[in-house]
Image (cartoon, rainbow, N blue to C red; front, side):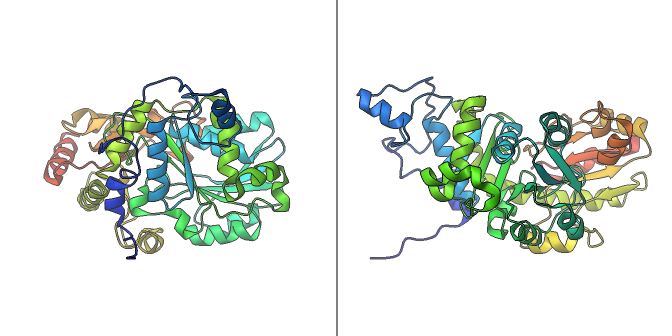
Length: 417
């Protein structure tokens, strides 16, 4: 018997799960737009509620369209299982709360996405949970912040908008030595550029709204479990019943049963369908996104009105060596930040753009720009705003348009200011 071929990432992004489906040869997953699923017998429904079967019951619990997406995303991230959620923040909240209790601590990068920072620093603190923020580039800082109360370490593959690339292998080793799992937000890299679970991380999450969908038509999130962390350790005795039920997938099972179901974080089936469609072109899109980012970074760096450009692809960037090795020479991400004279100049620049869109999203097939200081971080205290953003900073997410048109728009807007 011939050995089954192990297909490349781009091929799996298109074909994963199609031939295993009972959909009568359909090459796209049907949209199961139904609130609930009936069962032929009372015993069948009882067994499903008891976890003895994996049939569907109610959309808040599971849905065939969403399950198809979960299996595909688990495969692309080299995980053992996945649960999709209604947004990236829902996925982050579910993953973290699965591990946290009142009095616990966790360690996180100090340069986080705005909503993640608010969740960790404001919301969780209300419930007696302490976050210790650290420099993601300092292994010593990370090591020093971990103690017996630390339940996990949380990092972003590429920080937003800091543009730092942490050493996943090294951080995973530190977390492992303290019996704590490493959670990675892999949104800005996508599994095409980086697969943190293969580098030692235990849990990966995404805002699927971004590169995984790529079209700006759907919102969603996902948590992927490597299925390798030992949940029988002293620090996680509260996981015992879930280990007994699901073994190496105890984390994912607990998250699903306690938080996903009861917080009502399930995605709409139509959004799962749209995300699955976006995955078909993920590989080829990322190639163009990343190529455009390199050219845009070089262009902006040469402009006299641009005070600085922050992009990991520059050899003098503090993350260059780590990013080059960690991303297997495939690129440095598709986002960059750059600085103009002041906030007024940033506003004038945005207002003069003709094609590039000013909106609060990234990872779209369209090139997008935002002034984070005056938008996403506007309600933050002044000192914190300056730490996480900067009045001079503009964030540019490179789309897949022709690079000449992107550079033309940047140039004409710079000329105007």
